[in-house]
Image (cartoon, rainbow, N blue to C red; front, side, top):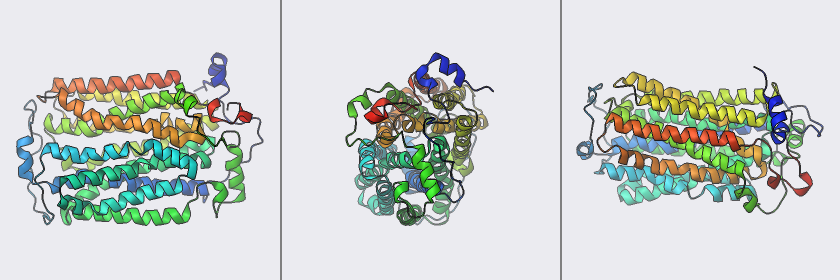
Length: 495
């Protein structure tokens, strides 16, 4: 395959300058080794941090099954009769010492959704604070706070549903700062030609955390009781926090164990990309079309993401009459595929830029198109599979796996266009991207009053259309070079 950079250069002067290797006018320091490096140690620690973060986020969805008195929800179920029953209820004796609560389906929805109401509040403040004081402590205390609140979940449940909803919202507040804080740290740590690798490693922990925590939470509930789900993951979060504080620094300049060669390599690669402005250029930032291209893409991707991972299992249960929660492997399989795709696509993206001389924006566009249109296609296909639940599982897995390409697409484009303000930009885009998790399931429920296949096809069509629109919008208006408003006046060039 020939690199398309030459074609881009002739048709778009701005993008034509966005080549690799970057910073042609600056003497380049030879890349520091990967093995034992401080930047990859940071990526691994961040990986486990986001592993813990998502384990703390999703454990309630599993534990809630054991927290509810099963007789409470029997009257709420409205299952379609279009498909034959695929799975019969299995009565298995297991540990039932955990307390049960009389919460109906609507109450359970409020409990599960309350996380997002806290999560959306701290996105932009988290990015701003991280840009001022650094991301290490903000991310560390965000996860620590979430872990501590998790430990108190059984106590809050005993106090009542209101206390549990408030606790989950507080957990959302803690988790809301983490992604912007990590982006802010990578703005000082990630050399441009290693961004895809480093960020995909660190953020892939979120997917693997889901892969492990879903079946593990079920096992804990089975052999112990649901309270231990929160105790175990809460303690693991505290242990991670101690390691993070001891081993990580905000910048290469303050790291105690970094080699001089690696420090010079990182600093020289970022020399003309960072700004030393004291104030944040809010007005030009919010007027920046490349930023809004990421916003639209992030919003659109999450709409389909939440549709796939929240609503398709419901579709399988209520329409196809196959309960995916009965099989921990099938529940975790889509996340495993996404995790694997994130790791591999990160390696591929940086190789395309460093070795094949693809432009940054070309790589971001191609990976975003694959990671957004691919899931949209399989989401629409899911509406036409009839009563074949095996095919539904396959489509769910393929769709979620393809979404992993976006980790090296629009997801890290914040660092391309404004590395100095990447945390703030992610806070802005993630604020909009949290909305689908709050309103998407509500809209889908209103569109499926009778739980028919045709009603669900409409839900899938809408989600797919939003995803395709986001992919096209980002392809048209996304950029791969540092924007002028993100640089000092004396650095008024683009890379």
